[in-house]
Length: 290
Image (cartoon, rainbow, N blue to C red; front, side, top):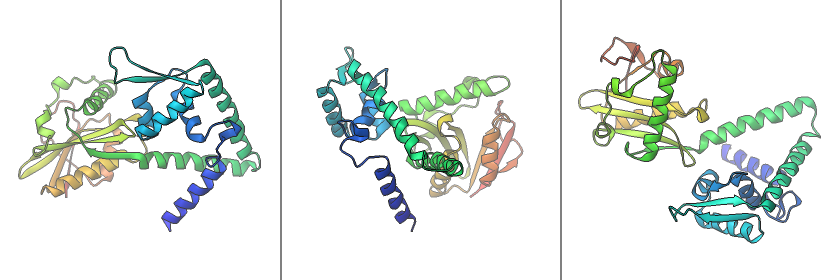
């Protein structure tokens, strides 16, 4: 029943927004071309980033870009320093077309709301916002990642930066208990990353200690996806990984400034325990029996 409802919703939406029309918003191009034109933006976009944001096959995106180039709306140039890096930019005609698409899109959205009463409009807009959030949540994937990978490094950089801002006395990774790369690389442990499209938006690490309790470290969720259940998913995936390796007890420590994390741990079944290490930035220690 759920699958049938999703399919029915998809059919209604694609028809209502004009995705089936060869000439989207009465322009001389389909929705795919129009979306790429809009996504390139006024400042241009790296083609790889564009492909990642739209989840498009490289060959299909190349065809869309070529069609927009042929129409005089887009130029694609290779970087002088690295020929593998290509940047798409809108021409003057492309910028004018994008502005017109914005105007027509506003009109189309207004026409969708116009037949509805005030209460119906509120319901529709609120439902759309909720659907957007849930679709974003369903687009997040979680997989193991080498802690040396640039995406993993980026997550840790953002994580440390946030701790520095939120902790009362700042944060210096060099003064915290260390988490070495080889400690969170199988078989010694694991690092899980969450990606939204190609952007890393969360991470968590696990250190295994043989028959002793395993430790959860470096739990972080980016601001862009907070409130979408990504932290809970990361924690659940890590617990499943731990169970698969015979772990019976998980432990972690956290700072009192991280109230959201504390709430997550408690709701996930972690109970507060006396300190089990000398982490200088910790105020709370938790444990969960699996």
